[in-house]
Length: 277
Image (cartoon, rainbow, N blue to C red; front, top):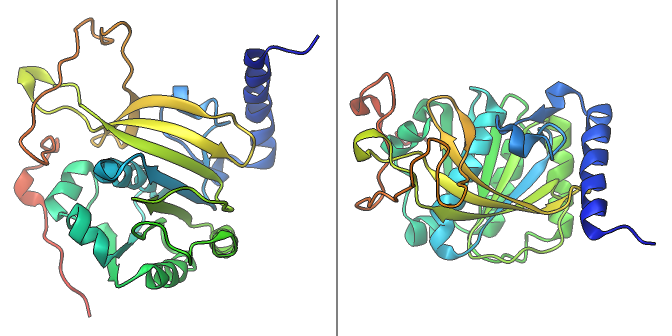
């Protein structure tokens, strides 16, 4: 008698959790800070690897970028982050805002933002950044489907990340997944945040789906929130519409792009970007 699909999936999860620590030391992984996600992944994600983050739809561009940035912050651990972005992304999704990054938990002084003309330049500049072992993480954000981002290109980028041990996040907006050498592939959608006390805007919330895992972890889905003050993910699930605090979640209407005020420092502490070179 063949095993039930649920049994096979459960066995694969257990095997991945058992085999992962043998292949990777603690320093080779970075975690979500959320056991519900980390445990099925065998402790977290490979640090010296490429991870793909796809927006479910173009309207989820900010959610995909935010989730990728949160992963970069977890991987970098206070180190410098380079973000290589195609100019067209600024036109379609808007430019990155220094104040918003501060409120998300990133010191703009730790970010090097590179804007380039096309996907080929994105890949070229991103690969150069990944070669720098002093960096904590690199985000590479082309726009749309790009022929230059093929299997061979992803293999070269993965080998570079493995050599430098720099975590590399490919942020893909308005693009369809294709064959690649990435360690993991994610799909991200935006969720309404749960309001805090006095109906204050809540934590950024994401619906994330693991589409592919090189170690054989089966596809999974989670609802998570990003706690920027503690720089880790939180459980964003509800049971029958009731939150963990016993209250029924109500989405707070937000006028445009708005983030909660950072704890321990005023909003005025945010610094605008300065052009270098």
